[in-house]
Figure 1: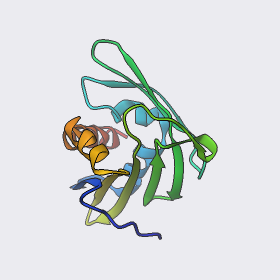
Figure 2: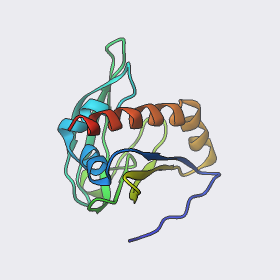
Figure 3: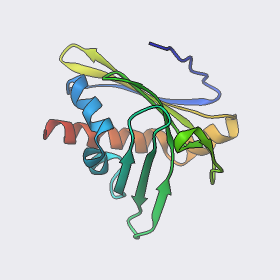
Figure 4: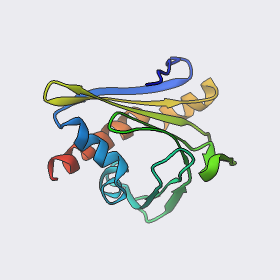
Length: 159
């Protein structure tokens, strides 16, 4: 397992223990039919998800605002450690192809670890500079990713 070091000047971290088994959290993160049920914090929705779960594979979603505006997100899977770690980035498209990103690019590291009957869940959003980190924080990283995690737990419990 590769360990990444967080940098508080560049990274945002959401860490919580949730009361669902790690394999259910993993399944919710790696099954497109489940991702569309929880990935965007309500009242936003995720209308589509394409996921090719291998390094270089696509991780594309389309989010819809409450007003009906759609926001496509194209990304690339970097690391898949079955059941425990998923890393993807918006800075690359499928096949590790560099891409231009409106706003800022980030790399997400999702870590899933057993914790008693539940899961220690850590989501880290890594940024290239402090300005990008601030932009992501200001747009509601902790609130949005926290709400999405609550929705992931709902979906996982309904399985």
